[in-house]
Image 1 (cartoon, rainbow, N blue to C red):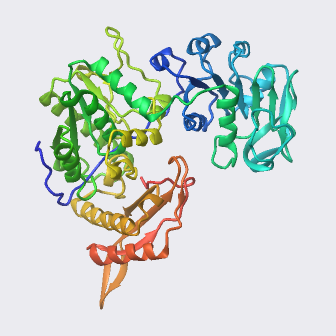
Image 2: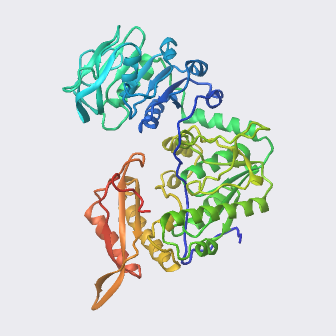
Length: 554
């Protein structure tokens, strides 16, 4: 089943990356930041959908940040020694029974605090003010009218747009607080206790809709918390290499390589740290895009001399999902089979001491599983990060984990990729989630339908690159539907499949909008697909945003 060089793909194709599982934010732990010789800001999460975004915005200022549970005690925070604390928004009302609260001793730490929306309400309530249901909620864009710049609003333009999302409002400020800004609907849109460095904003400065939100965050980070820019890509790479070498020593490391930016960056980083002690395993399930397996081996093994064990399992995976039409069932089968192949091949190639995974910070936030070996105290892998973490590793095949990227967000991983000389077309590669083409074929996956979609997808990517617009889109791909329609080609009627063209724009994949692609590009794609791909007679364009739709169709 194994060979060093992939043959050109016949009628079967590819799979890939991973999606995080949802769970609870991390409890405070000194383990994450104990190795970080740098300043940090702590974000206490009250269930906001934007907590991760707050962390990203802070890191964009080159200052390290972490998302912690709102249950984090003042003593735990004292040990972490953050330069500032941010209380996130959340779906609750502070006056509700059982609403989440932070440790009130936080207000005695002498550390600057910024409360955002719910976080502001909680600050006000715990310090003796009052929050009530607003007569009129405020949702969407609002002009921020500045009454007092203070430190928080320095260089924030008066009447600039900020994003509101609240049904409660502050009706009485605690002692020592003053109003910094208001909106037409909200008298206390930004507040401050200047002596204690407590600040609150009713809006969400972390979202892109807040025009001056990043400036406000920079003010809090630099002017109020007095931070310095120590969170840089270069510093991270140096630190990660030192940590990997110290942890691994002369032991062997196995990495499941997908070809995506996460696993590829990790491979380059680890190879720089430990050289030939690293073995990469690439399992070709048959759902990759045209020519990608060959290109992957050419880059890693041949060009950069990073050892890649190529596992050709195309027929095996295709047989497993034969006749399966339910998308979740497809995912599960592919995920479980991936684990079986991984187990077999790691045993054959081993033994290995460590499993390297491209775990990112959102994965860490969203998964409470630490899986600590009671004997060694090290994290061990019970799941392999492949297709949405479907399927666990056997109990007798638990690896110690090495996760150098677990402190990083996706955009930070790309910067690291550039720093370790990962080729640009991999660094800037469009996301290709889960089981690849298998979930872009609605209904049963067959060799014939794989071939159709693979060829159509290849043309789509070719035309987008020819138009020099590849990086204008977050994702660009085709979907094959399980229906046929009547067409006319020459003097003959056809009865063939449609290809759905999906081009979307997004910042982080959490939300997305359909792209207003030039008509000329749409026309060239359509003409080539219907003329060059046998079995297709129609191309349609998906103009659905996320929400209500998703980026992928399955």
